[in-house]
Amino acid sequence: METIFLEQWLHNIIRQKVKEDPEYRQFVGRESIDRLTRADIDRYHLFKLRKILAYAYHKSTFYRQLFDSNGIKVDDIKSLTDLANIPLTNPIDIAQHPYRFACVSLGDIARITTFTSSGTTGPQKRVFFTEGDLEVMTDFMAAGMKTVATEGDVVQIMLPSARPNDQADLLAKGARKMGGVPVISGITLSPEQQLRIIDQAHPAVLFGLVSPMYRITQETRHNHDLKGKGVKVVFVTSEYLSDSMRKQLQDTWNCDVHVHYGLTEMGLGVAVECHAHNGFHFNEADLLLEVVDPETGAVLADDEEGELVFTTLTREAMPLIRYRTHDISRLVSTPCECGAATLKKIANVTRRLEAIAKIGGEDEIYPAMFDELIFSIPEVIDYQMTLGKGEGRDTLHFRVEVTTESPHIGEAIRKLVSSHQLIRKNVAAKRLALPKVELVRQGTLRRLARAKKLIIDERQVNVDHP
Image (cartoon, rainbow, N blue to C red):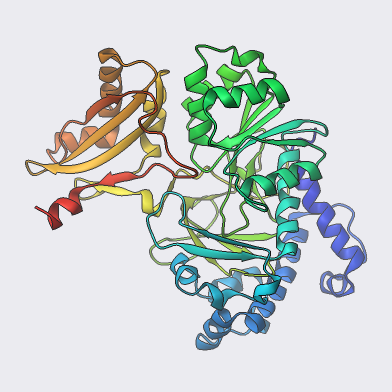
């Protein structure tokens, strides 16, 4: 198995581009490329960027109006840094005007996805894909799966599955492309039913959403020998995975754990964690990434934390230029320990803008801030946070689902949460009451599909409805 297959995959795409495209050979001034450097990847990105900008301008009414109203000309984009001159595209833009982004006729659209982003409560968005787009998406899924699996491995897919070209079906196609054997078990089965499929299919890889995968593990580990199931890799997606959750999954299944970072707008597959387990290598064949200040939109330097902004480089149906993800992370400048010398890397994505709330009027909190503490308790399955107001102070209420209800567990969680620096600071300043912890029985907090944890903020409700 390659240490990081994505690097070899990207290099091969660029070499093939040089071989087959005379225009690209003229652009880079080379007839062939043997050993690629980071500069070669940057030149590939600039070539693809200029192409997609011209395509979007001529085909998309949204981008034609955006470019014209801001005096943007494709010929003025002579370097990757010039991309910053183009205004950002906001999620609300595609929610309100999806068809103004379309670059093909409706008859050429193979998949329409209507959704509300995980972890948000905003208006629904609609995204379009052609058959060619779907092929590109499954190519990356195959490359990402090759990072953790080998030819002949059975991949059990625990993702929403209801129709052709949905999330599970596309991943299955990607698994087949890399020589794997996909088995779709979906997300509606009970933990016991999922285990029966594992016993029948003998998967080397389990691919699923973080919360359902963790729930299956927690609800079955006392009654089943999960270590003996032969699983080599648990591959999870859609949420932040704390170190304490990762350790529980590793120890219980006796296998490696990898994380995938994806966005529907970017074609589901975006980035995968390599064997260094400290960030993501993203799909640089099809995506260009910037990190910007979420308030000003200014482009930030490597290692500065900000909002991830993507530009699609190969999309036919609905290219997105400088699309704001609302996910907060950073580009890592130091070389990755996996040995991928020419790939960029995104640090772990711990939060998105919609999931952030403030306590005491100034300090930001978000669900992943407490994951490490709460999931360090082996009996925890999931938890929910609610912010309120009482006696002039903010209140914080944790409902924690556990495998075994015990006052000792509740008290241990309360102490852990109260020990967090921001909690201690605000309690001491009398801006926050001591957090309350309520244990709830197994199954109470079961979440649907890809729903992520949100902080339920009842303070605004209390203001509007006294």
